Image 1 (spheres, helix red, strand yellow):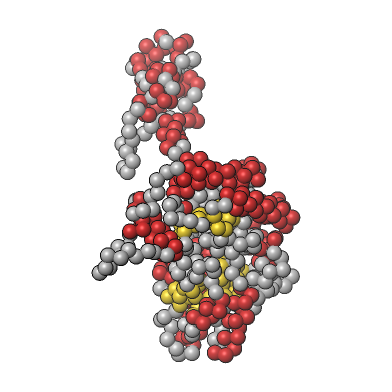
Image 2 (cartoon, one colour; image 1 turned 180 degrees about the vertical axis):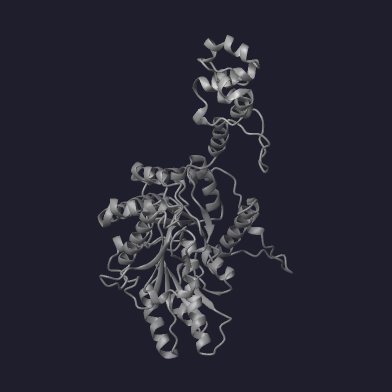
Length: 547
């Protein structure tokens, strides 16, 4: 019987040994390679042939076989954190090192700061895993995946009452989230405005967009990245969304659109898009402008159609030209997937759509990035056909039921003001009635000891003196967890009552000078404002590294 060395020769065997893959690592081939390497001669190898067919004796194999992962040298030595290691390590060691560090992350389902989906059905998980290696942009290679995306776009457009005929297909695209969707919608508005201004022979170098000060940071990014002035309607205490009247007053001939939010990040409240449409229509008639509306439905776009079907906020309003929505929020898909749909083809300038053919066929593309995964697109389609209208409605109703349970539990404590409304995104935003001794930032910090991640933050201008806590209620936040969280908040408040106040020096953040010795007493609002400023500085001071 010819051996490996007889057939391939010593040089070839040694070469093959060095480049073994998992697919040729088992059985007598690996054993013969190892023993040949260990004993060096063909004669010695033959002498031990009865042994080597059943036992691998690589020089390092003995230690690896009798040692557990945690007893290996790979977990007893530090690995470079900011440079690539010089040598490879076993796959189980690499896995364990990373897995151990990730244990220090918070539990996603207890992260009540995020609107993002943290649970999906196992069947959908399987679809996601099976499509991880599909690049969505390869439309010619993966035509079915492209078809699923087109189906999703049409489902969403019909959900938002786009004026489509039976034969007409919707205009829209899948994105990596609402941030990209908003960038694309903003670019379409800017280009349409510029084209019109050029045709009229008017200046087109100072575009602006009108929003509320409560917009998500992606709107600020759009304005800065694409050189558009952001005109913000300031908030007031007790009114934490954009005032449509003030917004329309800020509109001028350079306004490319007014952005309304369906589900404010701060309070979950829906802005009055219908009133905005009416007021803006009147102004357009008087001025001859045609200023449109974009609806940021990142959080509320998958809630309003199911819970508030009679609420007019979408393409039923003539000035609404585009809508974005986050599939990875209440679209019930893992991050990251978002969507943007346009009212009609006329609302998306042709010059923004690129055509490529080097992947096999002509492919139109309108995205900020190129390559991206297909998994979330497939997962979104799964949710649409799995749940249907009835399923989404049941889930959203359940989320609101649990939000009300939590709200009642917090109100029962007697120490908080509820700021969020009964209509909107299912969340609870609340502030302390008395912040003179302790703050919401301390409560958030103490809740982490129970495992809860609850954000504390100050409101946008001009309500920045109001500091709040916010709990986002998602599909996987059940009735029992709502009751448990309310009980833990009560425990934290009682615990803080036994601790010394940390707000004393906060009230002296802004020194008060006086020519007299008379003590100046601050109002409750001024004290709360100083406390909020202090804690905001304290929190920002702890932030470091890349963002």
